[in-house]
Structures are given as C-alpha cells and as structure tokens.
Image 1 (cartoon, rainbow, N blue to C red):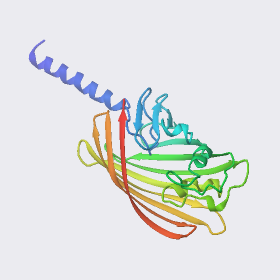
Image 2 (image 1 turned 135 degrees about the vertical axis):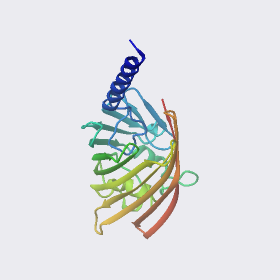
Image 3 (image 1 turned 180 degrees about the horizontal axis):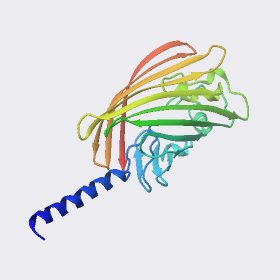
Image 4 (image 1 turned 120 degrees about the vertical axis):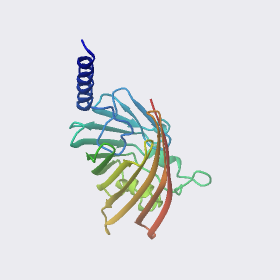
Length: 259
C-alpha cells in the first residue's frame, strides 16, 4: 500500500469513528433541574440539596443522606424520551415532615415553631413533568410543572407556619392543598469549565386569598471534569406571608461531588 492509499485509509477510519461518536449518546452529568437522568451507577452527592444515583440510564433516585433521618424524602425521575430533540421526564417525590416539625417546635436554640402546636402525621406527594431542549452543544432550556398535595391524620394549625423564604412555599401543601409548582431554567457554558444557570420558579397556593410565591435564581458554575461542581450566586424571593408581602435576596451556594 503506497502512502497515498494509506493516508486515505486512515482518513476513512477517523471519519467513521467520528460519525459513530456523534450517533452514540454521551454520558450526562450534573442533571439536576433538567429532564436528563444520570448514567447507570453514577452518584452525585450535594452539600445542601438532594443527592442522586443513577439506577439505570433512564431511572434516577434522589434523597438527602443526612436529612433522611429528620425529614425523610425520596424523589424518583424517569426519562421517557431520548437525549436528542425534546427530552421528557417525569418526577415523583414523597416527603414525611412530621419528625422535623416536632423537633423544631420548641423554645430556645433550634426552635422555629411555638411548642404549643402539635402536628399530625403528614406526608406530601408531588408529581411533575420536565421538558428539556438542547440549544447547541453546550446550552439547554428546561420547563417544569408539578402538583403537590398532602395527606394528614388531622388538622394543622394555621399559625404554625414557618414564615421564611424558600421554606414557606415548600411546606404550604400541608396547610393548603394542592399547590402548583412551575418554572423554567436556562443553563450553558461560558468557558470550558465555567458555566451559568438562571431560572424562575412559581408556587401557586390556594386558600381564601390565593397566593403566588416567586423565586429567581442565578448561579455561576465551576466544573472540574466529572468529579466536582461548585455553584455560587443568588436567589431572589417574593411572596405574601401571613404577616404581609416580602422580598428577600439570599445567597445560593452548592457543592456537588460526582463519582
């Protein structure tokens, strides 16, 4: 084989491998908040949020390794469509808050609720859909919608709410059920290892005076290959609490270890 034929043969092989690699789906990491699911057997451990594990390439389960003893919660995400075009997934979560609410119903350090209140046995169930669309090789937009409802063994005192941003709307289903949660998120890369995420979330809470809680979150992300991701930014919250409407600007920070 002369040099020209050898060169053409090598080019043909490289072209075939390139085409094959484009057809094969690449593993997806840092999938939280999107319709994508983790690859089979991958863990992503979060410092504050729910940590996730890929049971299969389409099925992901999440829980908090520390809070599971105080406020057990489990979330399951199943990806129905492929990884190209529109990606569709469903997300299902169950929470049991009674242990934690009883623990913080006291005076002094750690007390957030008056000890005069007793909580019945309660669980909340959330069912939702996520739809993601890839915008080129390094950007994605995701829309989500979910409905949350609670089951209780007895009534809950209206004055026992925790009137704090982020917490209040996520516990609202135990007082006024169901609650509708919807939002969107855009994420993309700025440089090879630096990216960003920005989005908004809305909680529609029924009652005598229907309330809407809104959150806007923006973070910069720094990713070290497939092992670490650091997130830092802000969370802007607005809502109508029992004492009136309030705005809050909070820091947003997360560390994720993947393996």
